[in-house]
Length: 304
Ligand SMILES: Cc1cc2nc3c(=O)[nH]c(=O)nc-3n(C[C@H](O)[C@H](O)[C@H](O)COP(=O)(O)OP(=O)(O)OC[C@H]3O[C@@H](n4cnc5c(N)ncnc54)[C@H](O)[C@@H]3O)c2cc1C
Ligand code: SF4
Image (cartoon, rainbow, N blue to C red; front, side, top):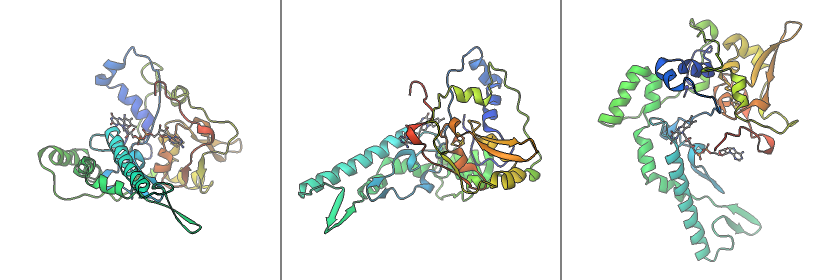
């Protein structure tokens, strides 16, 4: 199930949307009587062609979802990730071969001038991408996300049907509204979804779901979820957006806790984090930064 993080209602609770989706008769018929065996969540990199960054830097290249190669129209990124890795590998191999052919001491990676060492940039990877089917595919799906966000599901969907299946529309739409700025304040929305209570058979609560993601973090490490300003969740996000982190986090990491004296405190249960990066993307104050935790912690999905 995918919830587009450009949603504007701060009361939306993506985890509970998924639970409700499972109760639809069309879906329920396939799930009823089944057993919940695992749980996980991850943000899909949906920017595609219009959002690609510079692909190379001295000593490194961006491939796969790191660069944003997922084709949002298909919601598929495995083939594009593999292709970008292959193009990158070819470019590096050729650079190494050229360096070795020139008698280079360390192949392609470094140029030494006196005491200075410069790390080379394999820009040939970018050229290979430009000449590949990967670029063609992403170019042809570049309007998908912007059309849905600008025109909505019906008109945007119609636009995309024509663009993808009838003829490629010869102009580019841009979506310049970041997902974090899409949320409306609570006092500007009238609709508050009423999510049904989980039944423990077809629908489940968040914490028991996180449990079967087998998430483990080394204990006593500093939180890998950094707040730029620790006062913002209670002083800004809570009154303005009812602190949406309580709902958009699929692992229940963020809680507003009421103290005995009635004051509110923002609690971060970092050990539960399944590393989806939604908080880094969706926090309306852009106050949360996800960093890699110590010791390779995180979810351990079975059979992956
Ligand atoms: C719910 C969902 C459904 C999808 N369905 C499809 C589909 O049907 N078909 C399709 O083609 N694509 C699908 N995709 C997209 C596809 O999964 C991704 O585009 C693709 O996996 C990207 O590959 P990648 O190698 O770039 O990144 P990833 O597959 O994300 O691999 C990155 C790896 O790096 C590891 N890592 C991260 N940080 C560190 C660190 N600090 N140290 C060491 N390791 C680290 C991660 O654990 C991970 O194993 C789906 C995505 C989602 C979320
Ligand atoms: S804390 Fe952030 S990265 Fe971790 S599970 Fe929650 S939203 Fe995802």
